[in-house]
Image 1 (cartoon, rainbow, N blue to C red):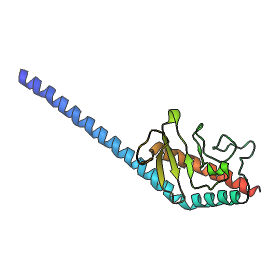
Image 2 (image 1 turned 90 degrees about the vertical axis):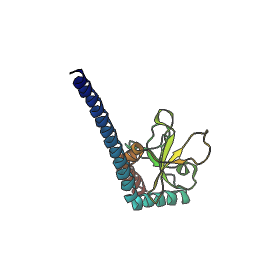
Image 3 (image 1 turned 180 degrees about the horizontal axis):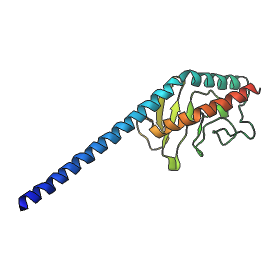
Image 4 (image 1 turned 90 degrees about the horizontal axis):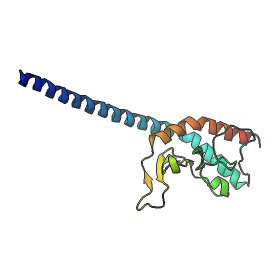
Length: 170
């Protein structure tokens, strides 16, 4: 009788271990699915991203600084440009927009509590993670974080709308 109880308890332990492994595997598969969906969704935005980069660079070439409009609810730079910022971590152009340089990508700049991996997306729509730490040896490019790509997708339409409104107001 004692052996039966022991065997039942051992079977429960094994069943629980299998259930835990299944749950863990399902969670990992879901995370990977979310990553792929976000990455592919950003790639689909490639033509629109290219248009925004071309317009931003045309502004800079013509000495027009793209400022946010007063009262705008745009996400983006803390200096009133449509640039990415490291304080609020919103979508924006890379720093070229503020320095009258060339805009090469859209970014979400992280840092501090938000981690040290920035999200960079060029005109090809390829999302890249970029380590923004000074203590990096080797490549700074890493796999982008799913939550950053999801944030990019969440903010993109509004950013595009507000930037195009700025262009239309010229």
